Amino acid sequence: ASGYVVNTTPADSFPVHNTAETLFDRLDAAGLTWRVYCDPPSHYSLTGVIHAARLRPRFATNFFSTEQFFEDAERGELPTYSFIEPQIIGFNHNDMHPPFGDLLSAVAKAGGIGEPDQLRFDNPSSLIAGEDLLDRVYRAVRDSSAPTGSNHLNTTLLVTFDEHGGTYDHVPPPSAVPPDASGAGQFGFHFDRSGVR
Image (cartoon, one colour):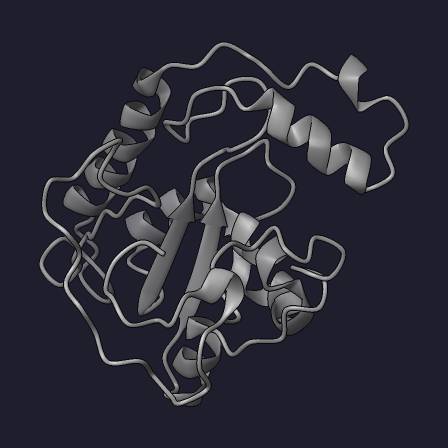
């Protein structure tokens, strides 16, 4: 997060100038293979957008469609780490989020799109499409029986969601040791507790 509590401030420089080291840099340094698979018809990966300043040189070699994931799984050619991103924008998105057209209109305006309010960002949403993507990914891993390489015997599927515990959590987050002595960051946050900022 480049030390920010929220990544919308300063909107004019994040993520364009976000040069923070990424997990992908660490995987490369360790000699481990990785790919980010994006569900079509997305023409970009959110990971790629957020970290474009660092990952742009890897767009052609490490960013593919989920259709490529299914082919790689079937052939036993998955990389050491595979990251799958759902379709987050547009019709038939399967990211399990409700419509968020107002947010996208604001982003479009900030990006210089002249009449973003005329764009149809609020398409119908359903968790079913996201559950279907998750099922297809699970089945691809489960059914992978390639005699060499990655297969159902040596592949772990870990599913994570980018959202946190809902509208109320009765358990306060535990305290944590700040990573350095730089003091308070954005909104006075000291990075002295675990969990969502």
